[in-house]
Length: 125
Image 1 (tube, rainbow, N blue to C red):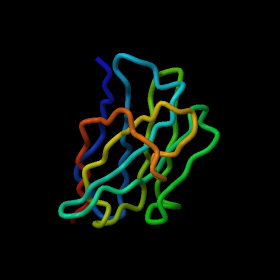
Image 2: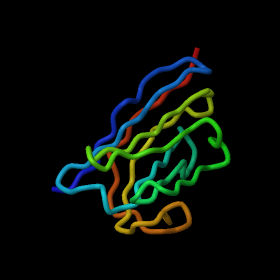
Image 3: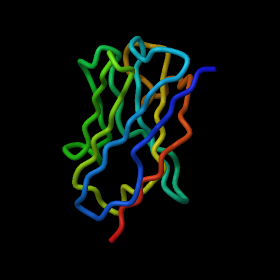
C-alpha cells in the first residue's frame, strides 16, 4: 500500500519554528515532485510549497516566502518543511502530497496522486 506519512506537527509560540517531515511507505519519493498544502479551520486548502524530484527547484506561496524552506533527502526518502517565524495565521493541518511527475505542478492545477494524513500545526501563545 502506498502511503505518505507526515510528522513534526505541534504547538509553538508565535515567532517559533517547527520542521515537518514527510516520508513514503511502499514506494520511493526520489522520482516525484513532493509538496505541502495546508487547511485552516473554516478555510479552503491552499498550496504552501513544492519541490521538484531532484531538489533543484522549489516554489512557495507568497504568504510563506522567506519564512518556510522545503528540502528533500532522496537517499533517505524524506521531504522536509522548515517553518520559521511562525504566525498564528499559519495554524492549520499540513498535508504532504505527491504527484507522479518530476516537476511541480500541483499548486497550478496538477493532479495530486497521493496525500498524507495530515499534521496539525498550532501557533499560539
